[in-house]
Structures are given as structure tokens and as C-alpha cells.
Amino acid sequence: MRILALLLATLSLSACAVTSTAPRSYSNPVIDADFPDPAVIRTADGHFYIYATQGGDPIRNIQVARSSDLVRWQQLGDALPQKPGWASRTQDFWAPDIHQADGTYYLYYSAKPDAALSDNKRGLCLAVATASTPAGPFVDSGRPLQCGEGFVNIDPFAYDDPATGKKLLYWGSGFGPIKVQELADDRTSFKPGSRPVDLVPAIKNENPAEYQRLVEGAWVIRRNGYHYLFYSGDNCCGPKAHYAVMVARSRNATGPFELRPRPLYLVVEANKRWLAPGHNAIIRDDAGADWMLYHAVDRQRPRSKPTDDINSRRVLLLDRLVWRNGWPEVQAKRPSSGPRAGPVVRSIRR
Image (cartoon, rainbow, N blue to C red):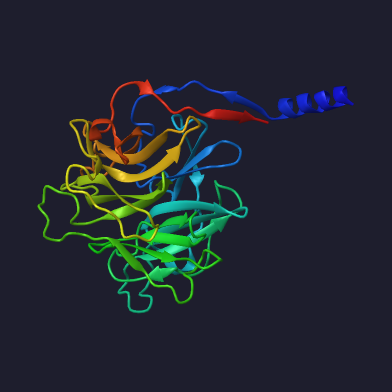
């Protein structure tokens, strides 16, 4: 009987072998192409999938790439190959987020409708699509989650609050605050009776050298009893590109969030090589280290094509977060250049 048990255990290990990989050396960028506003997820088979704003050649409505180590990425096809009927002619599919629950993958994104919906004056809408696999194809739910004027309804981020069990969606801001609201159980609509809660305000009269005149790109993680809300501002790209990642924290996922004065609130800002770093995602490696994926403009190549606008080519960077007195930041608060040790990832071979 004991021999049989040992034999079964051996067969089980050979069918699903777990190997520990040493940190792979890497240098930024990890995707040397326009791949802005990243959102990342790790799937049960050990792979990482990352999603980005519309782009590529040929153009993809939602870009998606896959990796086994967070360093080497293979760009896949279009995660949202069929535009929704309410946004069939738009070229504004922005800042996706990915969430997995109960065997379904939920892709939240922003898009401009073909015509005015309600009184939104053709501003952007929050939307959600679903798929059974992380690479898609994702299919839109058939209706926007919410619409409004301008670009208030952008940069969604879905989060299941481990403390309360509530399904939350963060978004914003279009010179307004970053907000959060509870989702319904179907995750494709807001919970009836729920209301948005303002979290991080935009500071309209702030010194132009700062970053909070416009805030956007929320991403939330829970560490050591706090919810950390990462966000970006003030201008992602273009001739006046001026962008950085900041962070606030709260004991509650719906706030209030503690904001610190400069420079303590900064997670990362520009340096001589990398301009306008921001709109981040966070993922933890198998050694328990937190890694930040985010875009930035390479000052050495700020355009994909000579005819493109300046600072429109936003490549994908990867840097480890360090924690100082309960607050996260990239080392020296600047993007890295040159070789360094990468994440520790244990691969699963089936």
C-alpha cells in the first residue's frame, strides 16, 4: 500500500513539475513598442497576461501580451477583436483592466460611443467585456457601464475587497476626483442603490511642477492592513508630457485615503532617459516582492513613426517596488536603465 502511495505521488509530481527559476537579468523596456496603460494578471497555469490601450501595427482595439517571467513578452492578437455595437466606429479604446472570477475573465475599458448616449455629449464611457480565456476574444456586454461628459469615465480598475467581500470599481478622472463604486454581483453593472465615492481629488490650482492637476490610472493593492491606491498625473503624453506615479493609503478600500506632501507621495517620476512614467499595474513575484509595470516615453525614440506626435510612443517598463516606513516607491523614485535582477518566478510544467 505504501509503495502504491509513493508511486502515485511520483506520477503526480511528474505530471505537474514545479521548478524555481533564478531571477532573470533584464533591462528596460520589457516591451519596446507603444504599449500604454498596462494591466496585468497571473493565471492558474503560471503565465502572466498584460493588456494595453488601443495600438499596434496592425492596430488592435485592446493589446494583449503573455509572459512566463514578467521579462520576456510575446505580443498576441486583439483581445477585443469585435468592437461593441455602441462604439463600432470609434478609435478610442483606452486603459483596460483585467479581473478573473468564477472561471470568467472580465475586461473593463473605456471607449467613445458612436453617438451621444443620454446626456453625455459623446464623452467616454466605461465598459466591460467577458471571455473564458485570458487572451480572449472578449465580447462586450452590449451596453456601456456608464457614460458622461468629457473623459471622466476612464481608467477602470476592478477590486474585490478582502475585508468586506464587496466588488468595487475605481475610475476617473477628467480633472475630477478618482472615484469608487460597488459593482453588482454580475460585475457588469453597478449595484442598485450604490453611489460613487470621491477618493483622490484633482488640485486645479496646483503648482504646474506638481502632478495632481489631473489624476487618473487607479490601481489598488492590500498590504499589511492598508489598501494602497496608486494613481498617476498630470499629462501622460504629447508636447507637454509631464507624468508621474503617486500613492495614497487607507485602512478601508473606500477611503478616506491618506495623502502625503511632496516628495513623499511620489512612487516614480522622470529622469534623463525616461519621460512621463506612469499608469501602473502591480504584481507580486514568487519571492514576495512587488513589481510595477508602467509606461514611459523613451527620450531616445519618442515616436513610433516620423509623422506621429512627439512623446506618443509609450513603452513598457518594469521595476521592483521597495517599501520604506510602510510606503512603496521605485528605487530612487526613478525608472531603471541597464541590467538588473528580475522577478523570481516559479514555472509550472504540465
